[in-house]
Image 1 (cartoon, protein in one colour):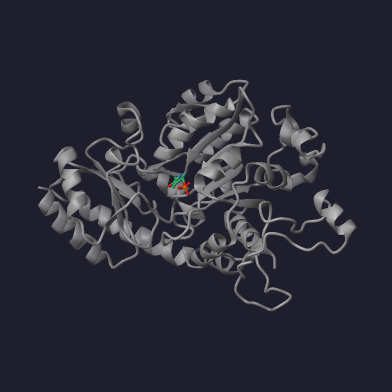
Image 2 (cartoon, rainbow, N blue to C red):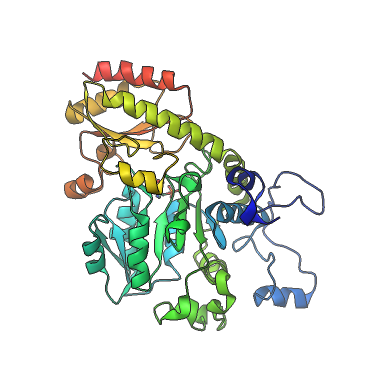
Length: 427
Ligand SMILES: *Cc1c(COP(=O)(O)O)cnc(C)c1O
């Protein structure tokens, strides 16, 4: 089946899998197998030489996990993809083929709190670093790029601030410098935005969120557009030069699959951030209804945001789907079907009111998660963004008087009623 000609919801149900030829199983089976029997010694050698695509060992590839990676690749309009053990693993896997000691990335200052920590602290242990910039200041982005920069990294809709990134503008800068734009598309999902169509090379996901959709799995995905010419400069030797970690294979010779094959043959093999087949199966189940769910998520989010904007206790609502949002115009271009279902509200009553609100909500669950069918709430300054400096908290849109809402797919009247009673108690 030609994936390019099918619609989104068709791909969400079918892409990446044909009924199992041995059993006819209609649903993607959970291939709970570590290893796969080689037909003969030649077959084994061809697989190890990357001359034939197949299964060797589940740290590298597994049929259930592969179906998931290929399904997300189809939804994103990508050439290939890999599934990983978490969204954070996916970020490391996206950077790994590009980076080396002394290399850096230019990253948006508006990112998921855990990503800011990963980029500002943990990657330094590998000799990598990140320069954080306000991606609305294109001159600052340009100025932050130096000879050692290997990627620009941003989120489509930045969590938690409800800020939409100008992907096209960043892609142009990345192009000019011969480096890829990497977009974390977790909060938008490919239903709202396909970053590759805006010039991105790599797209990463926390599959933990909307892709699975019901809070059952920790997982991540990286997909590659297949369009970046890794051999155009000497910046990406792991992809353009003989790779010593894979007996001298030149991955750029694999064309549009260079990044994907490197990520499997070297990245998953040696870093081992592999997704498990059971998790992949749950995520595949979730993706079948991604379009239906996102439609409801964004419809509910818009109504709740509008209602909150008119509430006396609320100082501000940062939902890019509201005409009052500074991101509104841009949202029409980047996420025209809706600005996601995640936004923050600032309460006039400050930190104390936020803590009271979180305690008084009944339908909303107070959890460190987002993108669940259930409505969720968290106070970033005391939780997800606690480890950040006060200035980083402000820049990330997680000031002390800010509460983050992830609007679920329940009846919107019930969501609003819960907020109404809790805001009354928060004072
Ligand atoms: C949750 C999240 C991550 C990290 O994903 P995990 O699956 O928790 O590792 C990265 N980026 C964004 C935008 C997220 O929401």
